[in-house]
Image 1 (tube, rainbow, N blue to C red):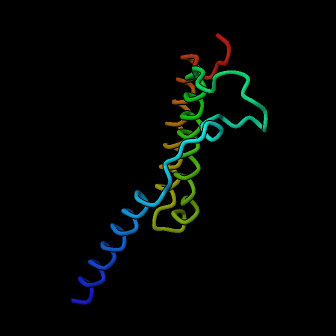
Image 2: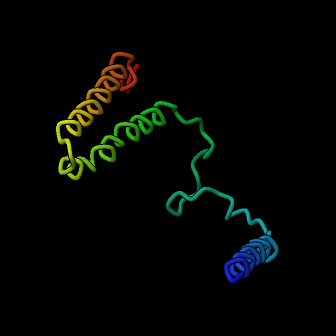
Image 3: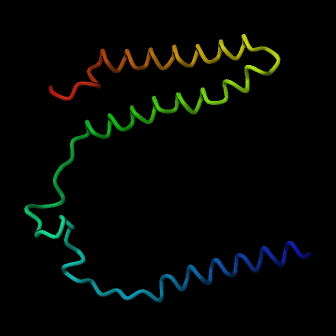
Length: 115
Protein backbone atom coordinates (compact mmCIF):
# COMPACT_ATOMS: atom_id res chain seq x y z
CA UNK A 1 0.00 0.00 0.00
CA UNK A 2 2.81 2.42 0.94
CA UNK A 3 4.71 1.68 -2.27
CA UNK A 4 1.62 2.44 -4.34
CA UNK A 5 1.12 5.80 -2.61
CA UNK A 6 4.76 6.75 -3.18
CA UNK A 7 4.55 5.74 -6.86
CA UNK A 8 1.38 7.77 -7.41
CA UNK A 9 2.96 10.74 -5.58
CA UNK A 10 6.09 10.56 -7.75
CA UNK A 11 4.03 10.33 -10.95
CA UNK A 12 1.99 13.34 -9.83
CA UNK A 13 5.16 15.35 -9.07
CA UNK A 14 6.70 14.47 -12.46
CA UNK A 15 3.54 15.43 -14.36
CA UNK A 16 3.13 18.62 -12.32
CA UNK A 17 6.72 19.79 -12.78
CA UNK A 18 6.68 18.79 -16.47
CA UNK A 19 3.48 20.79 -17.00
CA UNK A 20 4.94 23.81 -15.23
CA UNK A 21 8.00 23.71 -17.46
CA UNK A 22 5.74 24.27 -20.48
CA UNK A 23 3.62 27.00 -18.88
CA UNK A 24 6.19 29.18 -17.10
CA UNK A 25 8.89 30.10 -19.68
CA UNK A 26 8.56 33.27 -21.68
CA UNK A 27 8.39 32.66 -25.40
CA UNK A 28 9.88 35.97 -26.52
CA UNK A 29 12.35 35.37 -29.31
CA UNK A 30 15.10 37.97 -29.51
CA UNK A 31 17.11 38.42 -32.70
CA UNK A 32 20.41 38.41 -30.81
CA UNK A 33 19.58 35.21 -28.98
CA UNK A 34 18.76 33.46 -32.23
CA UNK A 35 22.12 34.40 -33.80
CA UNK A 36 25.01 31.91 -33.59
CA UNK A 37 27.69 32.87 -31.09
CA UNK A 38 31.13 33.46 -32.58
CA UNK A 39 33.31 34.79 -29.77
CA UNK A 40 31.49 38.11 -29.58
CA UNK A 41 31.83 38.93 -33.28
CA UNK A 42 29.00 39.22 -35.74
CA UNK A 43 28.75 35.99 -37.71
CA UNK A 44 30.74 36.05 -40.93
CA UNK A 45 28.47 33.68 -42.82
CA UNK A 46 25.62 31.29 -42.39
CA UNK A 47 25.86 28.88 -39.47
CA UNK A 48 23.86 26.34 -41.44
CA UNK A 49 26.63 25.29 -43.83
CA UNK A 50 26.69 21.70 -45.08
CA UNK A 51 28.87 19.51 -42.90
CA UNK A 52 31.12 16.80 -44.26
CA UNK A 53 29.93 13.31 -43.43
CA UNK A 54 33.55 12.19 -43.16
CA UNK A 55 33.71 13.75 -39.67
CA UNK A 56 30.70 11.69 -38.58
CA UNK A 57 32.27 8.55 -40.03
CA UNK A 58 35.48 9.11 -38.11
CA UNK A 59 33.52 9.80 -34.91
CA UNK A 60 31.51 6.60 -35.31
CA UNK A 61 34.67 4.62 -36.02
CA UNK A 62 36.27 6.10 -32.92
CA UNK A 63 33.29 5.08 -30.80
CA UNK A 64 33.27 1.61 -32.32
CA UNK A 65 36.93 0.97 -31.64
CA UNK A 66 36.77 2.70 -28.28
CA UNK A 67 34.36 0.00 -27.13
CA UNK A 68 37.35 -2.28 -27.17
CA UNK A 69 38.42 -0.80 -23.86
CA UNK A 70 35.00 -1.34 -22.34
CA UNK A 71 34.94 -4.95 -23.54
CA UNK A 72 38.45 -5.71 -22.30
CA UNK A 73 38.15 -3.89 -18.96
CA UNK A 74 36.78 -6.89 -17.01
CA UNK A 75 39.60 -9.12 -18.30
CA UNK A 76 41.73 -8.98 -15.10
CA UNK A 77 38.76 -10.10 -13.00
CA UNK A 78 37.85 -12.87 -15.41
CA UNK A 79 41.42 -14.17 -15.28
CA UNK A 80 40.85 -14.97 -11.60
CA UNK A 81 37.77 -17.03 -12.47
CA UNK A 82 37.68 -20.73 -13.21
CA UNK A 83 39.26 -20.78 -16.69
CA UNK A 84 41.76 -18.00 -17.46
CA UNK A 85 42.55 -19.58 -20.82
CA UNK A 86 38.92 -19.11 -21.89
CA UNK A 87 39.01 -15.43 -20.83
CA UNK A 88 42.23 -14.81 -22.75
CA UNK A 89 40.73 -16.57 -25.77
CA UNK A 90 37.69 -14.28 -25.67
CA UNK A 91 39.92 -11.21 -25.36
CA UNK A 92 42.04 -12.32 -28.30
CA UNK A 93 38.86 -12.99 -30.29
CA UNK A 94 37.59 -9.46 -29.61
CA UNK A 95 40.95 -7.96 -30.59
CA UNK A 96 41.11 -10.00 -33.80
CA UNK A 97 37.54 -9.04 -34.71
CA UNK A 98 38.25 -5.34 -34.15
CA UNK A 99 41.54 -5.57 -36.03
CA UNK A 100 39.75 -7.11 -39.01
CA UNK A 101 37.24 -4.24 -38.88
CA UNK A 102 40.08 -1.72 -38.83
CA UNK A 103 41.76 -3.39 -41.82
CA UNK A 104 38.44 -3.40 -43.69
CA UNK A 105 37.91 0.32 -43.07
CA UNK A 106 41.50 1.02 -44.10
CA UNK A 107 41.12 -0.93 -47.37
CA UNK A 108 37.76 0.74 -48.14
CA UNK A 109 39.33 4.18 -47.67
CA UNK A 110 37.28 5.17 -44.64
CA UNK A 111 40.34 6.51 -42.82
CA UNK A 112 41.57 8.77 -45.63
CA UNK A 113 40.91 12.49 -45.29
CA UNK A 114 41.73 13.59 -48.82
CA UNK A 115 40.06 12.02 -51.81
